[in-house]
Length: 64
Length: 431
Image (tube, rainbow over all chains, first blue to last red; front, side, top):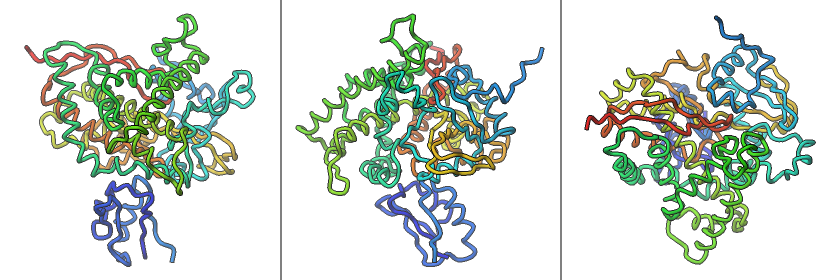
């Protein structure tokens, strides 16, 4: 599964980085980027938590 | 003697006095249990509205900003169309300017406007500002050092957020008191204490509230017209009015109305809510001496204490939305055009989400409260609010660990802002 961050919405709160550091990293421009192409099954739960916790609700699963 | 039993049919959350006397929690608790999506009938002037009281439902409404829009008003039930004419109130005046600032904007324009300023509010920007926040805090505390009793709201809680936002706006210090006064008039318009432009015998009426808000907005408009005029001639670096003046959306500069509304919002939102977070926070800590003692013993608990303060206080009682299409929430049919009020204090006491929600616990984990909302309109200033609370309590308790309440708090008459107007405290420095 692919996960995406809406860069227009993201304001760098870094909740995602805290929830799933393997998947998200907030860059110098205060926008979170996705570090992986595909989210490994064992990280799905962490990513789900990141999606839920994001204050701007800027993260979503990409429709493939 | 038992207290009179609360009846569902008697509930009216459009009664600001219910919030002033702190009766709302009992009502919201009942709604969560018996009617979590509840139709609150309107009155002669006010619209009826749906009260949304469950955490997950407030998330749902917040996450669907196209279905539940902000541009029809974000505070209160709004005025019935048929009453509007009698009152001589125009649609624009009704929302006191909120309909054109980002807080009352919908996608896709909302994000474009918000992006003009949001870099000034990121965690990075907040970190950079922290030394300044600490300096201002100590300046405020220097002024009360040596005193015995004082009004914590007027002399401490209001002063920090006012200085921070006025600083970011580049306003001269001599004008800060005016900004405080105007904020009270606009956001506290329903409280007789701020209706000073209305003859005494007319205070406390809804007409007095409208007159007060309108007068406040008018004065603020005039003030910021001058600020914008000045920045056009003398642009400044890193000052929000200048940034807004130079900004473009899709190749177009902002209109005078957009600029004014933006300035209003920054000033109003920037100083009122944080003020109430600080005063509400001190109050709840003093009312829970075990929790205060625990924090004083281990200040590394401050971050989580601030989150619990935010959950407990919920500085905003509600935000309003209007449905653009028929929708269903928890089995209730919401019609297109219906007004929906999200009650944040209720989400933050939701028994399905928070264990022992009525226990104030500075170590509560997890604590995913909705005090700042969520999604499209998540509070732009949340980072500053959190840091201002943290720095204030760090410095306050370092310098005045024995501070205690010295009287009853005086609360704002409002079902929108969870305000404390006055909070008498004693510093107990033993000097």
